[in-house]
Amino acid sequence: MQSKSTKYIFITGGVVSGLGKGIVASSLGMLLKSQGYSVTIQKFDPYLNVDPGTMSPIQHGEVFVTEDGCETDLDLGHYERFLNQNLSRLNNVTSGMIFWDVLTKERRGDYLGKTVQIIPHVTNEIKSRIRAPLTNEYFDFVITEIGGTVGDIESLPFLEAIRQFQYQNREDCVHIHLTLVPHLSATGEFKTKPTQHSVKELREIGILANVIVCRSPEPLSFEIKEKIALFCDVAPEAVITSVDAASIYDVPLILENERLDAVVLNHLKMPIQPKKMAGWISFVEEIHKPNLSEVQVAIVGKYTQLSDSYFSVTESLSHAAAANHCKVLVKWVDSEEIEKNGADSYLKNVNGILIPGGFGGRGTEGKIAAAKYARENNVPYFGLCLGLHIAVVEFARNVLNLKEAHSTEFNEKTPDPIIHIMQDQKDVKKKGGTMRLGACDCKVEPGSRLYEAYQTPIISERHRHRYEFNNAYREQFEAAGMTITGTSPSGDLVEVVEIPSQKWFLACQFHPEFKSRPAQPHPLFSKFVAAAKG
Ligand code: GLN
Image 1 (cartoon, rainbow, N blue to C red):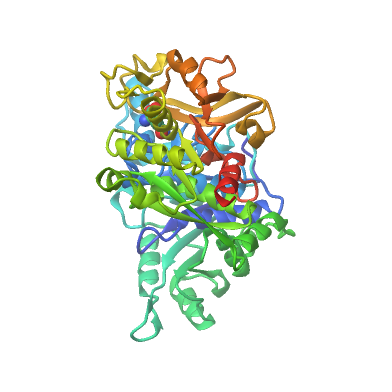
Image 2: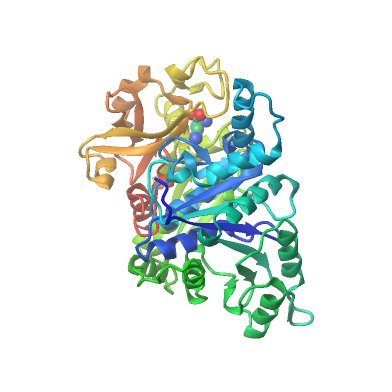
């Protein structure tokens, strides 16, 4: 529901990638929301994939899944966690999506007689997406983060669209540019030149930044800020330092201290309101408490060199750690290393084992060995999606004695297909956005660990998979001590398995990590960390 009073905040980045635009966007959103404003955040990604669902996590980091089943950029995870609010498929836009829509319209004849061009057809499509989150809902602020770095060829259509949008809605827009101010240890100086060049590059495109957020290892002095202000044509108070932080959750407090929200509100002539941030502040205080007991959790996967691949998982563990008054130390274990050297050498001293989602056969046997180690040594085990498949295959092989049991994802010819393709996935040939995706209800067995965590008979969680537990094996599993404690409401689809005789052994078909929030840790992560701590 668009309204004249909606304000638009754009965030671009310069100098280098990876400065944390997503965290700045999320932090500002959180500071505005804590003042009672309604806020949404969207990400514009300049790549040509229609969505990141088909990209390797090594290339792109985690694929975050929304309630409505859209595979999105991991920044959407930050937005949801910082805003404590669900987002939707309208909040992530890629060049691929824009071109797809423009070309579909061209084929339909919507532009008959016209030459279809980047300007105005692509830029108009982008401009319509700036307002898209307002389709069903009113927001006081729409924050739009542009992926990539100013100067990239592929982000030019987005920047031109924003330039036009700002020209047409000048009073309602503010443009924040995030840059790097490096500190040279040899001379002890901060260097402002990269920032000047980046702002100049933006100006050549026709965009004047109103606020410069400078990522820097140390706070910038007023003199440095004045210098940046002079060269970048902004007020000195609109030069904000985003100093390197111990935790991403510190960033809203750092930026509040630098008055980022006040500068933005002043620019937009909106009132500054008192903030309600008690929950956030107590979470941040908890994670920084000294002398917290340490709990070591092994995450066994194949993308362990890049923690971005499992971002929501590690964030969920940190939320759960705060709730349990402890610190979770993540030990990244590459499952292929387990295949070479055995599970003992990597898992001997850990307090909990977590196997996250994944695709493809590489490293599978190492993950199965990790699940076996957890079961045989009574180490708390938490399996997420693929982590459920792994747990049941291990149980089939080593408890039910079905030695060749497997998932048909990894061995189509296995005599015991404990995990097989879902019925409605059998004829699916296309790869993009075709998995079982998004929120589905799950029925919870009373008296189970699952029930103990949620305390409610029906839950809803987000999914992203094609394979499922094979119902032909249900009875054998239950008789041998692995119980099915969560199913789809009809009872057809296995959603959760547990081994009640173990200290804590639970695996779910869904991805609980997408719903954990700093001040509302996910109940399954909390129980898993509690078990690991105990
Ligand atoms: N590869 C498995 C499937 O498609 C698991 C997916 C996942 O872990 N997200 O069912």
